[in-house]
Amino acid sequence: MTPAAPSFELLPGAGDSPVILHVPHSAREIPAAVRAGIVLDDAALERELDHITDAHTARLAEDAARLAPVTPWRFVNGLSRLVVDPERFPDEREEMLAVGMGAVYTRTTHGDPLRPADTDPEPLVGRYFRPYAQAMTQAVRDRLAGTGRAVVIDVHSYPTRRLPYELHGAGPRPPVCVGTDAFHTPAWLADLAREAFAGCGETGLDSPFAGAYVPLEFYGKEPRVGALMVEIRRDTYMTEPGGPAGPGLGRLASALAALADGVADRGARP
Image (cartoon, rainbow, N blue to C red; front, side):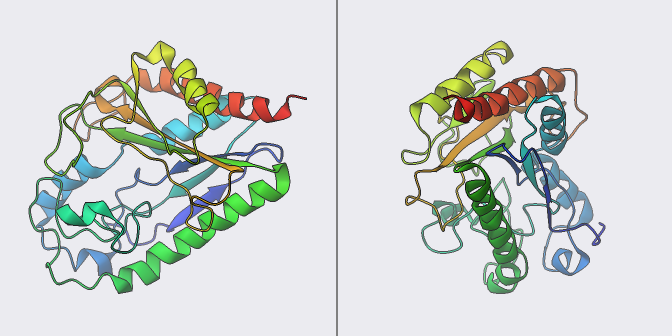
């Protein structure tokens, strides 16, 4: 494990783009001090990283940004979600606490111990979660100041077969799942996503994963902040659980670029 990776990186896009491609779960890096608090042996940890990591999604966002006529911004997590999960609520509001997967995980995807059950999450929340949240909040503020709006597009992937940790995994598992939020995902945005990914197979809504990430400062309050989650079934672009990317990645990158450009174009209309 290499401890030198940055916690996160904001990669600039066009000044007139409101889009932030958010890539929170693509990395496998775990700092040595954090690794010391994880009870899995090295082989078991590598297997868990295979299951929990949204492999190749940083590359997917990079390729989409290069293809989009109006370059979207990218906010990329450089550390594994086993350090902290920046998309969880950091308190009792988080439903994934029920399976040991709040902001700081204590259980694996298969329900085995990852950290001691009495682990205090606060040191990791303070060191990694809060700075990440503050930086993402500022990135959204900057898009609001620069364009009058911001649209966060979360870039995720999910396994073909349901893993035990999934609370709502009994429903359909389409090639592309679009996660929405009642306040922050207008109908046009969800429709645009389904249109953009139409060539990638069936696109479903909110199954097996629902919701969309918005920094808490704006969550449920600021209608100028839009949000959408794109969950891509892994067998469409890679060898599962943690293998290489395949040719499907290019088709998905083109679709994501079309989505980002469609969002930018909508704001440019008179």
